[in-house]
Length: 337
Ligand SMILES: NC(=O)c1ccc[n+]([C@@H]2O[C@H](COP(=O)([O-])OP(=O)(O)OC[C@H]3O[C@@H](n4cnc5c(N)ncnc54)[C@H](OP(=O)(O)O)[C@@H]3O)[C@@H](O)[C@H]2O)c1
Image 1: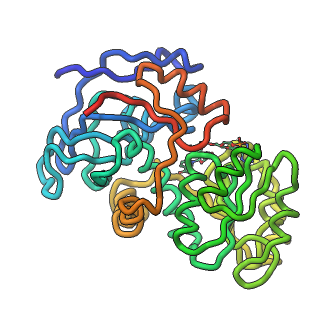
Image 2: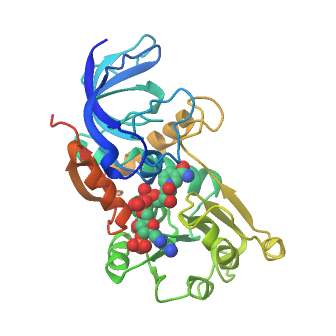
C-alpha cells in the first residue's frame, strides 16, 4: 500500500499532539471516490476528538477531519455520476486532514467554478448541519423568528444567511459588538450581546410568526447552560434544536414551562447519521444539492472564512478555533490546484 501524508495524533491531548506525517494511502471501494485534497475545514468536533473525547463512529477513519474540498483522483466501482478531475467538496465521517481521502459518492457536492477550493472546504459541515436542523427538523419557513446562538461561529454565519434567504427574521447572540456587526452584515436583524444583555428578555421583546413573544426556532450551540433560558425564550409552538454542548451536557428542564407553550426540543448529530437510508448523510446531501447549492452558486450564500492556514499549522488552527476569536470558518490548506 502506498503512503500519503496526514495529521497523525501522538496520543490524545493539546494541539501539539498533531503531527503532519506519513499514513496509509486509502483506496476507493464500491460506490466511493478518492479525493486529492485541496483543503480541509476545521470543526469543534476535531478539537474534542484530538483530546480523546469524541471517537470516530465505527468504520470511520481515525484521522481528524469532517469535510474537505479537492479534485477526484479515482472513482470506485458503481460510481457513474462523478468523474476524475471533478472539483468537489465532501462531508466525511473522518479522514479529512490528509493529502487523499476516500468518501462515499453520495456525500459529494460540486464546487461551482467561481468558488475557490479553499473556501469550499468550509461548506459541507455547516451547510449539512444548518439545513438538517433548521429546515428538516424544525421546519423553518418565511416569517418566522429564528434565534441563532453563536452567530459568529462557522455554523452561525451560514445559518444566518440560509434563514434570511428563506424569508425568516434572524436574531443572534454573540460575545462582542464587532461580531454582532458582522452578523448584521450577513442579514441578522436582532443583535444580542450575551455578555451585556439577557437574551431571554431581548428575544421575548420580539414577536414570533404568530405574534407571540419569543422565537419560533432556536439553534443552540451551548446545551446545558442555556437549556432553561432557551425554553423561556421559545414562543408558543417553538422548536429548540440543540446541536452543541459548549455549556455542558446535564441541564435542568422545566417541563411545565415547555408544555405550557407546546414546545419541542430536538438534539441532532450529523456525524453519526448513517451513510444511506432514512435520516442519512446521503439524504441531507440530496437536499443541499437541490435547495442550498443554487444559492451558493449565485452568491446568495457565501462561505465566511476567518483564516486559511497550511496543514502543517493544524495546531495553530485548533488554538485559533478554541480561542473563540474567530468569525466563520478556519481552513487548512493541503495543496494548491
Ligand atoms: N450536532 C452536530 O451535528 C454539529 C455539527 C457541527 C457543529 N456542531 C456544533 O455547533 C457549534 C458551532 O460549531 P462551529 O464549528 O461553528 O463552532 P465555532 O466556529 O468554533 O464557534 C463557536 C462559537 O461559540 C460562541 N460562544 C461561546 N460562548 C457562547 C455563549 N455563552 N453564547 C453564545 N455563543 C457562545 C463563540 O462566539 P462568541 O465569541 O460570540 O462567544 C464561538 O463563535 C459547536 O458547539 C459545534 O460542536 C454540531
